[in-house]
Image (cartoon, rainbow, N blue to C red; front, side, top):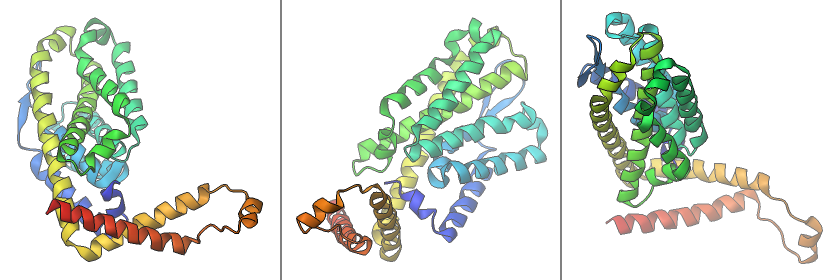
Length: 295
């Protein structure tokens, strides 16, 4: 399960994560910049923070966190944003995608990528340098191939699967940022096809570095949270209770049985409270077993 989705249900935890993430992004943005081909500008490495932001805060609160941070930077130093106010678009879409993927809602990411590719190929430069977006296409195909498994990997007991999920999440998010940045380069800065041809080796290196960094932050956050929850008994119990209540409510709505058949064989469906108690015992037993295995 996506543990952060349940952590966010606690308002204080959500507030602390929102403030912490926003401050971290704000501090990180000035560091690690890449030279922009064709212009006297540098690209910030903030895309590598989008996966972590979306994972922690989800696609709604994550959007507000990255939007607020970038907006403040834009107001403080407008010249640093070579796309003007449109510079807010790529990171915002990247975080929305990251949040959706981490919750298993992969179709949102597919739509964002597909729409971006469509816009890119509608431009003259996009059609001329059609191979420029091959990494974005790769990201789209990877998402379609793994779908909900990306979220499952991120919250798996197997560290290798966590790393794989983090890499997929980071790569797809970073490439969404790149794709929409490329579109703005064509529409807003009027970059030529030659500029896009020359930048290919450079952007591959940049995005590879950002992907690895983004995956590192994701794995770090997941592992720290898992470690915290294993040692924070009361908080873990609160999360489990929230998870169980949600599961029971969902499953209770989906129950479709023949009442007459139940009466005939003297069988009854357990009440919600009974289901919750049973699930609590099972989950606690599983959590205890997993904890012992970790030790």
